[in-house]
Image (cartoon, rainbow, N blue to C red; front, side, top):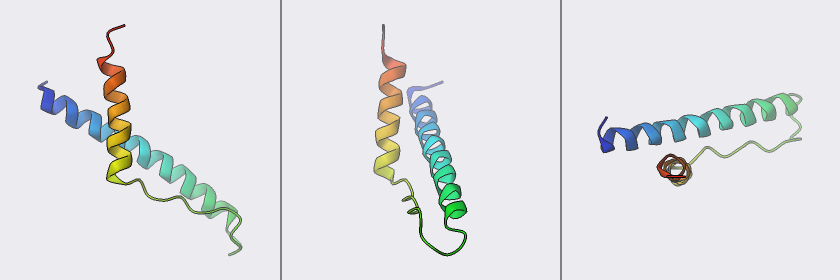
Length: 66
């Protein structure tokens, strides 16, 4: 795997993690707001900045030499 492929895999993993988190939070909000009374705010969809921040965290963890 080339460094570019590794970076892209980390990016995809970051996106998938945030997408999963968003889906869980969105489903919870839908459940709590079933009667059209807002009891729980809907989450914001992850931005590119969010994905890149998460990718940076994963990259630092993977690159750690401890």
